[in-house]
Amino acid sequence: MTETPDVAQTRNRVATHLVGREHELELILSAVAAGRDLVLEGPPGTGKTTLLRAIAEEWGIPLFYVEGNADLTPAKLVGHHNPARVLKEDYSEDNFVPGPLLEAMQQGGFLYLEEFNRAPDDTLNTLLAALAERRITVPRAGSVTAVPTFRLIASMNPYDNVGTTRLSTSITDRLCRLAVDYQDEAAEIGIVNLRTDKGGALGELLVKDAVWVNRATRRHPDLRQGSSVRGAIDIVLVANQLAAMRGVAEAADSTTRLDAESAYPKLVLDAMTVALSGRIHLDEASDTTAERVVKEIWEDRFILSPAAAQPG
Image (cartoon, rainbow, N blue to C red):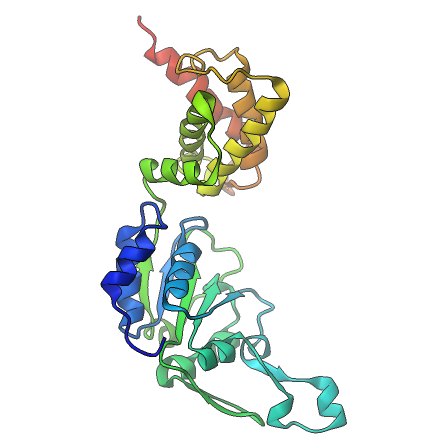
């Protein structure tokens, strides 16, 4: 892509592949089409990568993915000279192996730096020239000027402070920012329907229950961070396999969930334990386990709520 894209046409085409992210799509498109670099702040599983991949594919440009962590050195981000060839020859430009930053600049792609605030300060400082001047000079390798479509898109998780560093103002001042939170319940039901084979009345019931219990993890008092929509997807996928093994009837209806002693609620509890216990993060001050929290949420859905809804 060498010319400014038609953002309205891009929005319309990309929106057909997304559920509940139309507003965020418009804002991201506006920022990158305006030539701005961007940081997306939100928990995992909120569609940030999906949005960027869809835009990059629509524009026909590559997406370079980098995970920010303490091991991300400037050499891993920018590139390095091939040690074997240096020993045999010298530090020539031909012996330089470009990293994802240089590749994104050379090819005019998006550099997606996930967990941006986990990368060391000296690594982030190597981005300053690329952000400010769209050009970077590598000792003994020369200079690289970014193709106009190059963008840095970073992401951060506001709920996780373990192992993170505070970003300097020299970095944040060069980035636009967009908060990307969880979708609403209707949108998450739509996502789970797309990602699973709901298959009949049992499947429809599973999707609704899976989304409800999954969203409940985000408001439980003992949890620092709940599960993304991926948890609901996995609940449905695991529960479908359990249903096939246990012979749970396909002819399910709304009354199935009201009987906590039936096979269906127990099936959901087992699927929840597998799908959610590793995804939820306990508050440091809580004195419980992930399995207990999952059981409490299950009881809220299958015992307490139906009991409160019964006459008298």
